[in-house]
Amino acid sequence: MQSRYVAIGLLIVALMGAFSVNLPAQPSDIQEVRVCIFDHALRTPGGKPGEPIHIQAGKPCLMTVENYDGIEHEVRFGRNPTANYDGYQENLMEGFLGLRLEPGQFVTLLLQIPPEKKGEWEMGSFLPGDYQAGYQLPIVIE
Image 1: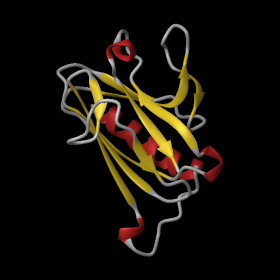
Image 2: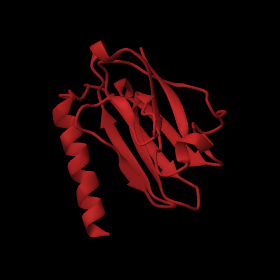
Image 3: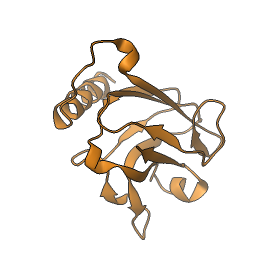
């Protein structure tokens, strides 16, 4: 279990370095997004399956992903799933292939998506059968 926490900590440090996160002067300048995994879907609290989340390019975003399902799921960011549903053809964050969350686990990521990544993306789980069952969520980078 300790190695999982170390891996998550290293992931956050890697993402911060990869996207050169410049923390704003005011905490109110950080966008916060919460995503829940449950009932065969990824969604925001109170949101409907398939309802996109919006992230501002070039600004820091704290994204918390919580697994409320009774089974393990993963989180990947990209677009155009591969033909055999084992990942995305294009990853939103180069070098970040994803992470797995056991039931009841959560992760908070500090992201800053560069402006050249504006467009339609998604997050999804590609464990066997997950993507086809609906474990995906559109993301719009504005």
